[in-house]
Image (cartoon, rainbow, N blue to C red; front, side, top):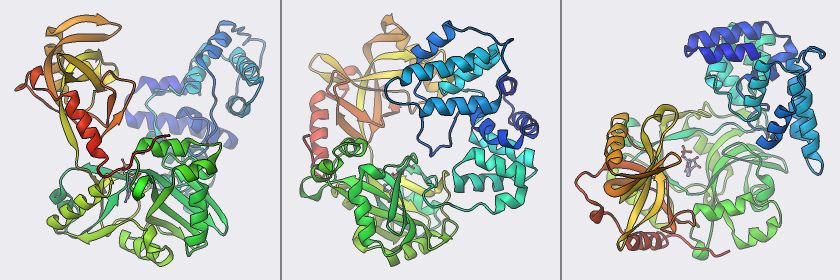
Length: 521
Ligand code: AMP
């Protein structure tokens, strides 16, 4: 397996990678397939499994430095042994766990040859970097099993377990894959949306009439309910049931189906029923102790927007309109996302304005005949957000790495405050390669000094930066930070004196609360 990883790293050709993977998978014992597949993509457990290794770099260093490599005396490592040992490492917790983790690691490292050590370290620190993501692995599995990639992808979508899917593909083939069903309490990946700032464009892309729903600024949840058992999963598929007992109760009391998977967004509610900023919701979500106390302090509101499964039937291949109709049949209307169905741009604009005034983030547009495609970002769903922008001065920039090597690409952005410039955020988003090059040359001309990969410059370059929200932050000198900042234009026409001021940021920040509640905790 270690050899395979090196071979995969050495080629950038997708076809070649898939051939190498197929050949490798063919040569495995059935019991090795699942763990091998997970390890090669650099994970140990399926995505929905929250277990983590929690091995620090210092522990690893110590094990490596102490490295008694007694390979010759020991049995060579097997995939099974590696996977079981890593699982044991993840399972150890509590007092003495550092020692135990460390000795389990020593056991592995002492039996590994140098290439195996390298691969093990990469797996442990989630830095495989051999160009094999889930998509490439799916192709390898399909090739090995002689089945269509689509069939393997569908099985993964339903089970969320790449290893298990590989095992089924290789041992049971097409028939086994065809029999894979969604399992209750195993979350499906969420369907994703593309961004748009233009309503007319969305209407055109959806060929006319389309559904517009409020885009709530909260946390997405997938709710699985069977009888009285309710489990709730976050967007990243981790089980968050324990932190939101209020939502669990709400589902038990108000949903008309005892066998359903629903999707929606929870939003924290402040004074006067207005939504609170995302930051506050996260505080609620991360809570594991004194949960009920937080239930009182920060109440949540649920907005449901999809029904993926009901009464034994998976509904993801049903069109959006049908899923919505079925959802309406079992959910009280006050729990459903506010929406309109129209192709009238003016009507949508008015609806967007209402959404913003109610403290939400924008709109979602959903094609009426669209299926639910887990994990896929396409044009069947659009998110529409009005964004704001500021003209900011670049005061420093970091040398990039990876694709941006050789360019100054992470820009430290500042607002004007009297004669001073105060940083409000950093971003490397939004520019083309050509623009990176241009910015690099320009900034080198303004360079004052360079410290540890950061070039500090005279204030001379202004960029227009779009963002979605201003937050209070202690991280930057301005006392604020921008959420989702991206450079939208280089303002060659502006000098630093034309840049926006700290005072303007302050008033924009306060303006956000015209429609949103504030909370002090
Ligand atoms: P993205 O995840 O980047 O594709 O953006 C869409 C996100 O908006 C989802 O993940 C949800 O968390 C959130 N959201 C808010 N309101 C809705 C809605 N009505 N339908 C779908 N997603 C929504």
